[in-house]
Length: 329
Image (cartoon, rainbow, N blue to C red; front, side):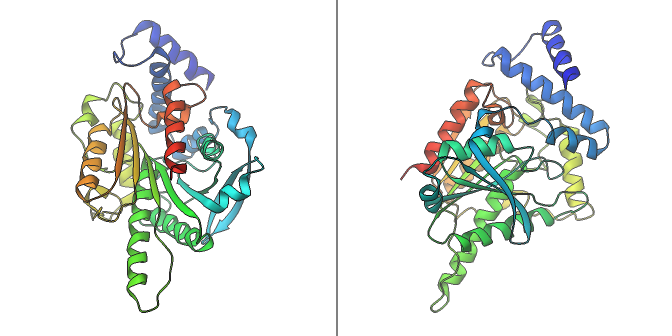
């Protein structure tokens, strides 16, 4: 960690060029994260997982929440709630399920504890974060099945609450998939005589969602020097997830999914990230399908910059926007 910090600082002195709309601090963190991913792409996956889980950005929000591990729908989850006295009332009104990113191969509620805690504090809601199975040990559709199982179980456990699904990167795709499949289940059950099953998600929050893992052109190339994500890692991660399965599944490439029944959706991304153009395409497709979409593009920012809300002004602003969207009537 210390070595990457000094190495990134040194690179800023040697090669200070950056996007015109990007602050020095944003560029510094983008370079530091890129070095971590480059190292991880050359080393054992378990090394990268340990590094990611151990590199949580110190956040004041971590001291303002309670966190416990539970099993929901057969999947271990972190249940994170603010310590405020108003929690009971708030949690009865809204419950958030947060799906972490990590290319389906790394990440956990621990690695995303800072983001989850900030989300819980800002929205005064209970946040449930599935520790879903990862590839390559558990290839497709294990992550998708785990996330859907948790979503269905939470929807049944909190029938009177607003249900908000949220996720970043690959977790964004998992959130989209869960929202669509839960919505389809609601329609199926409501069509039955006297049926009264689970209800669909009320809102969807997407942070830099990875909606097209097959993309190899566009901003995947033009933003290669601006983002911390690297193309070879993305290709390796998708290969680890799908393995010998050559099917292009809409549960992973959600650009191919039927977006007709998406709930009101907030999408955030940075115009310096690799996924910028595919996210714009997804937002357009969702709107054409009839979804109520709010798209927020942050100038100069990289992939999932919101994770750095304790140190980046744009990230704090983004997290506040998410909280407003969640609690809006």
